[in-house]
Image (tube, rainbow, N blue to C red):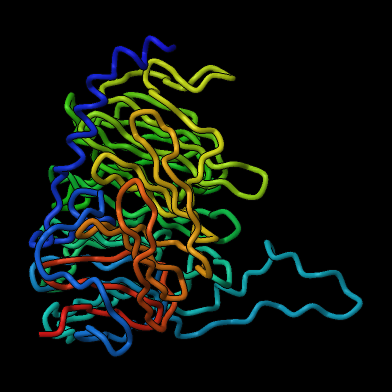
Length: 451
């Protein structure tokens, strides 16, 4: 196994040098969750680095309804998806002296009424350009009281906007708001009613949708023009939340999908290329990659630790390390007790960063060896769900209470300052030109440097 590490050392070093020039440009559109290159590394000029309720807020847009999904941007148009409750039926109350009602038998949600909406907002002014109701009616599955029916981020290819509302349906619009096609991918129970969260991905005129649940999980490829099904593969997975990613590595292009097992698929055919049993508890964070290596894992829960793996490009077959081992012919290194939380990991200038879900702990790692460079805690930070981003050698991450911590990038930890907005934040950012968009539960904020 040590031989595997040795023969790859030169390639590993060249890969890390490549990390310093990963392409991400704020003049580009922001078409999907985590941006055009899935790396959250921002370049460009005059992006804001400081903000607050009365500082650098260019405009706000009132978000109707509820959603955890992130905004996307194409040209001057910002797209936001949400679910709006018109009629909510309270669950049955417990009668004193009687057994507690079985939540699985509660069908009150079938009498509720929701609207699933897509809004288009002008990037310059924050004014609504159009709003469309994709569907109105009763939910098809029951949700947990703390969650909503709009967890997926839309994706745009410049011609069409693709919106997945989980078990409600899949909807395709042109950029003027005309519905082009829709697709019913089924309705299945999810873990604890926590709903769905895997956002769709577009590549080569194909839309990829991960539908993992407690009943019938699958991955499906749809023709972007008309929604026709191109291929479908069954998955031996339960409910998962991470978003698939297209990995254009030095040897081939793969569709990487997380779960209890991470898997690489041929995007054209759905054929399985490789798989890796990752363990962990929840599949929430998505992977991050360069042209040679993929860094992917699962978050933990209570006594189940998080995991993290470094996967080599071009591998085939089952690459799961043998029991008791941390390496294999496809796994360069792994951690079975990793500091990975729900936010996705990110790479910058030859370093790999992980953010914990709770506690404000930021971990900096050496991607070559998997060793920890530092592990530091930012005090008084709430739960973190959104993926951090990098700009001007600074790491930005916010907690759900709206506190953005700004950390100096590099091997030495330094908290520079914090920004604050008054809202609740689960969604990740979107960026274009000089505008930073941060979506809260109540408002969509456009942050720009004041002239």
